[in-house]
Every structure is written in C-alpha cells, then in structure tokens.
Length: 197
Image (cartoon, rainbow, N blue to C red; front, side, top):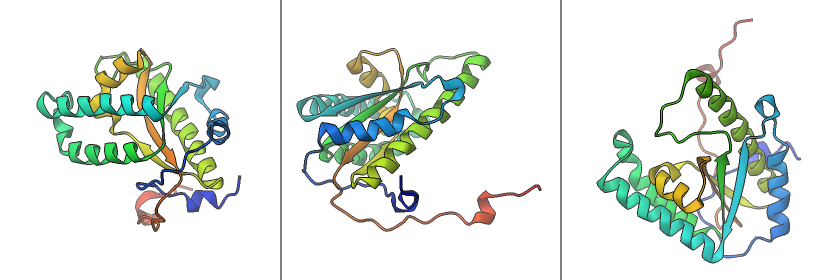
C-alpha cells in the first residue's frame, strides 16, 4: 500500500451513482481483515449492503432516528441528531454501506463488569485499526469512504433489523467520490504530542 494514502484519504460526503464491483469490495475488506487485533481475537464482522437491501437498512435507521427525537436513549447527545440526519442522506447516496460489528461486544445500553469493559476497549481499538485499513485501501484504489458512528442514534432498531446480538460499532459508506475535499485542519503537534524522553 502506498504510504501517501495516509495523507490523501478524505471523508467523502458526495458520491456518484457508479456501482462498485464485488471484486473491489472484497479487496477492500481483505485489507480490513489483516489489521492487528488484541490477542488476535479479530473481533470484527462486516455486513455489506447495496441496492434494495441498503434501502431497507436505511429505512430502519431513519425510523430509529425519529424515535430518538421523541424518546431519546441518548438524552445528552440529542444535539447530534441533525448531523445524524445529514449522515443518513449521505448514506442514501453512497452505493454501498458496510455495517461494522464487534463479535465480542455487548449493547452499550447494558452494564458490564470491568474485565469485560477492558476487553471491549481492546476490541474497539482492534476494529478501529481494521476500519482504517479499509479506508486506506479504498483510497489506494480510488474509492471514497465515510466512517460513520451516527448509527448509535438508531442502535436498537438496527440491531433488531440485523438480527444480531453483536455490538454495532458503526458503518462505512463506500463508493466513487463526487467531490475532492481539501484536507481538514489538524491540531498542532504541541497540543497532541508530549515527550517524556
């Protein structure tokens, strides 16, 4: 993989209607599968949606967002609902949505013990590495992506739709980009790096 992909990667919010072949999707997901993981648990699972199945998934997410507006399960996060609605619009435009699950995780709405919480943290780090591999491989082969966490606003509806007990981590919108956004600002190194050598 070309190291420049790290710097060329962008979050894409406008997609063309050009379809993405299964062969390309498989190449991208293979990159996700080779990510490092805590204790080699490889806790990720990817469910790929397109066409009519994608429409059903996103209708379910829309239903969950409407429920969250009226009966929030995340009452301190409701200010994020307008952004979530915009994310849903982007997901409808992207030809492919990849749902990301933690096969060892629990619902965020139940309490777990400290040992399970540490495992969850380690597995979330592992899945983050897997997602980043997916984003970078996509960039390398000319596919645009958006890493999505706004699925949290429709969590119960989506896990019911998916018929899974696995933890819903998020989603990735995937397709050919219809925009070329500039790099986003980054914090100064002095604000995020501390040396104790």
